[in-house]
Amino acid sequence: MGAARSRRLLGALAGFAALVLTACGGGDRAPQVATEIEHFIAAAPSSPVPTDIWGDVQRFYAGRMYAPRWVGDGDEEQAAAALRVVQRAPAHGLGAASYDDADLPRLLASKQSIDETLGGDVARIARLDVRITATLLTLARDVAVGRTSPGSIDRRWKAARTPPDLVATLASATDAKGLDGWLDTIRPVHPEYAALQAALAALRAQLGDGADTGDERVRLLALNLERWRWLPDDLGARHILVNIPAFQMAVREKGQPVLEMKVVVGKPDRVTPVFSGQMETIVFSPYWNVPDSIAEGETAPAAARDPRFLSRNNMEILRRGEDGVSVVDPASVDWDDPDAIKALAFRQKPGPGNALGHVKFLFPNSYDVYLHDTPADALFAREGRAFSHGCVRLEKPDALAAYLLRGDPQWDDARIQAAMHQGEERHVAMKEKLPVHIVYFTAWPDGAGGVRTFPDVYEYDAKQSGSPAARGRVKVSSSAE
Image (cartoon, rainbow, N blue to C red):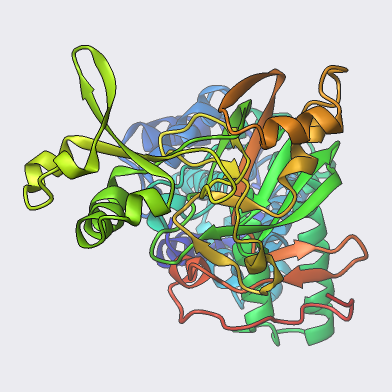
C-alpha cells in the first residue's frame, strides 16, 4: 500500500485515538457493536484498505464472531498496545509518515471517554475497531513481505518468502504483552535483518528525534531491510550466497562463511539476475556454448570479418539436424545470409583460453546463469567487477570444487586439478544439492555492530526508492568497512 493510502488510513485511526484509550462504556453495547462490525465488513473494502487486507480483516472478525477486539468493556490497554505496534514501524525501516501521526502523543494523553467523544454511537465504535485491525494487518504485511514488489526493480526478480498467517498470529496475541512482541514473530528470521534493525536504531539515536528525515543512511538501511523480506526464511543449513554489489561470494554453514572469494558479475547492461537455485553439477574442462545473443551480436560478425577468428579462439560451428549435431566447416558458411547463420550454433572447446576457464558449476535456471572459472584473472584486482555477460566468474573455482567434493575420497586436490586441465569435458553430479542465492544488498552487517556498504552497481536502490542513485560508500556506523 502506498504512503498516501497509509496516511489516510492512519489518519482515521489517529482521529479516533482519544477513543481508544478509554472504556467503551457499557459492556451491554458489545453485541450491538458486533452486529455493526459484521454488516460493515460484509461490504466492499473501506477506502483506502486494499482488497487483500480487507479479506484478512473479514477472516479476523469471523474468527471472533465479529466481537470488537480493541475497543470495549473498559479494556484500554489493548487499544494502547495496538497504537504502540503502529509506532514501531520505523524500527523496520517503514516510514513514520506512513504509519504514525504527529498528534498521536497528544491524543494518547486524552482523558475523554468514548461516550463523550462519540455520544455512544455504536456504528462509529465498530468502524474504529475495524480500522485499527486494518491498520495493524497492513503494517504486518509490509513487515512480513514488503511494501514494494521486486518485479518493479527487475521483472525477473521474484519474492520468495512464504508469508506467515497474519490473521492467526494477530488473533493469538491475545493480551497486550503478546501484542507488543507480535511484529517480531512475523518479520524475516534472518540474523542480518535483526542486525540491520539494530544499526538503524543506533543511527536514529545518533541523529536525534526527527533528524533522520531524508537521511541517506536511514534510507539505505530501510531499502536493504525490505530486500530481506523477499528472501525465503530457509536459505539452507549450507548454501552459497553471491552478493552482486559486494562482488563477493561466500559458502555459508549455519549462517557463517566457511569459504569466501571475489566474483565478477554482469555488466549494467547485462545484469546478473537476482534469484535462487540448487547447484547439482560440476563440469570440468567445459565447452562454452555461446548464447544466441552473443553469437548473433558478437561471434558471427567477428567470424565474418576475420576467417581466422574461430580457429584463433578455439571455436567450432555446429548444425543441429535430424541425425544429431554435426561440426560445420567455417569455409562452407555463407556469412552474408542471416537466416543461414541463425541456424548455426557456436561453441568454444575446452582449453586454457576457454571463456569459462577450467570448471563451471551448474544450478539449472531459466536465465542460463552459472558460476565458472575465467582466464581473465586480472579483473579480480579491480574494486568494481561488473564485466560479465550475466554469469558469475569465480576468483578461486578450484577451492569451490574441493569444498563441494570434500566428502568423496576419490576427488582429492590432485584429481580435481587433473580434471580441470584434461581438455575433455566431464560432468560430475553432486551427491548433495546445494542452494545458491544470488542477492542484491548494498548494506551488510559487519558482525561487529557496524554495517558495510557497497555501490549501487545496477542502480536498484534508486529504482526501489524512486530517488537519484546513491553514489560511493555511505558510512553507517563508526565501525571500519
